[in-house]
Length: 140
Image (cartoon, rainbow, N blue to C red; front, side, top):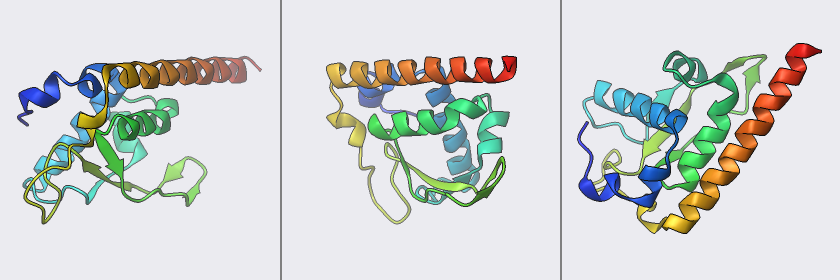
C-alpha cells in the first residue's frame, strides 16, 4: 500500500516501534482485502495480530500508542471477552480515507518530534514493566 512522503517522514511514523508497524501492516492488509473501501470497518482480532507477529501482551499498549500518535483509531472497544478470546475490534487508519469520505483525517500531522518521543518512552517503560510482570508470573 503506498504511503505519502509526508507521512513517512513525520515524527509519528518514525517513532512507531516494530509492534505498531506490524499492527498497521495487518490493518492495511485488511483494508486491501476489502478493496480499499472499508476503512473504519476493519475488523482484526487479537489472534490475527498475534499471528502477524505482535505479542499478545503488547497488543493493547501498541493500539493505544497508535491512537496517541494519530495513526489509527479503535472504533469499537470490545470489552466483552471470555478468558483469552476477545471479539474483533473495528479500526480506522487515519492516513487513508475512511469509508464514504474523500480524504484521510491525518491526525498524525499534529504530533511533534517531542510529543512522539514522550509517547514512545512511555510505551517502552510500560512494555518493560509488562515483560517483567510476565517473567515473574512464569517463575511463580
